[in-house]
Image 1 (cartoon, rainbow, N blue to C red):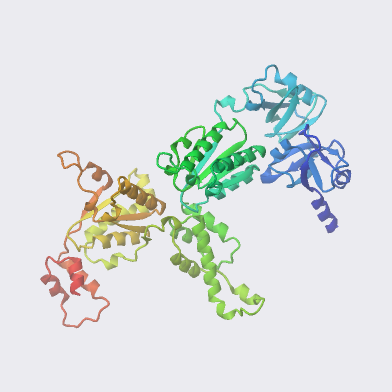
Image 2 (cartoon, one colour):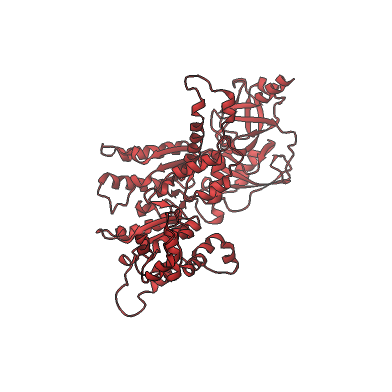
Length: 603
């Protein structure tokens, strides 16, 4: 009995084949023997299940020329199921198909352009009269009449079911503006995805194509370039022609900035011609041609501005660095087939991986698994073809493995900038209790308790300016507060941002802030700020107001008093052997005017 059930289950999964005639989208044909196995009779209504839970209904008819394990449906039905030829669909007999009382149908705007007369009398009435055709809510169907074909969409069915049969008494409602024209807008032609490297732009484009069952045509930017004059443009034209033959389709241009740079800034004639060709091709696409162009880039501002207007790349989507919730979801995907120890807490790992994108988290999981394997290398005999089952069962990725992997990996988007979580804590800085308290209130509390600030409608400070004599632990305080918040710490020396090229210094500042946002929470520390942020103009007035808006809190770091100097001496000598006759209190009294750095030098 079990084998018979398995056979029957396998028998209803059939391979899609092109229909012998393309005229009727409400009909599917099968071999008579296949129909007999599935207990389907001629004229029965069957439910076809395609990809991603997309279904449609058809009338089953026998076809002796069709192979037993195949099913023939036309292009419109395949589009409704989001499948292509040679894909597999499952066939199910509909026992509950009932006659519809009323169906609401609307034509597609681009198929009725230029047609005059009553659509119901010319197209729908001849199509449905005495045919008992099945309809599925949300499906498209094509009706041929006269010299033109018109495509319609099933909007609503009464009673409120997924599918029904259109009988002679069924009321067909076809009033209303054609789809798309009814809301007065045209569908987008292009989508530009931008974000840091390996953030999943290409993966998202593939997922969209798979979800919609669309043909996916990938163009890697540099691949279309050629040394022969005119061949690069020809390669681009061929790609668009191929996509239009296989609609619905998605053309995905990866690294689009390499083939479509700003024409005002590039000196290559080939690049300028390719940009012009791409503009012409995108403008020449027919409205509702079911072809979408998607581009991906790390540098959206490097693309020619003419591409970034309505009618070309209509939408620009930022694929940013995932937040804590996003990182947790990615970690769960990458670890679903890994054997994890009971002490592994993925939520903690997600919290500690600020600035990591999907590829970085995949590298983290791989490195943790390698750490686990390295621990067992001494008990594994590499000359054997197999590994003992007991050893395999004992191997599991632990929390220590993930911690070790976390130390050895860093966010790929931030590798150009030195980003670290400092190991300096409040215990390393003695004295300055008032400064510490003020820093905690200004920086630490908004990071650790954001909900309290939201409750009282308070905006946390954006910046803190340390000023005071040299050697008074200004840098050390910034590192300590970053460590207390478990935030990334980026240290920038003022002169590092300055270059001789016009505009590049400003671009460097923007880039540093972009990277800091990607690795948030982050403490961005500008050392020697006065070298790059001098007072503007030198005139009397509101010259310093811009700095005041960014640096909400000015904290003076004074020279340590006697009690603070005593604490600094104790901290500096806590790991050193000290003779009993050393009087730290006397040393603190005698070092009036000394900074923390001076006392460290004495020790």
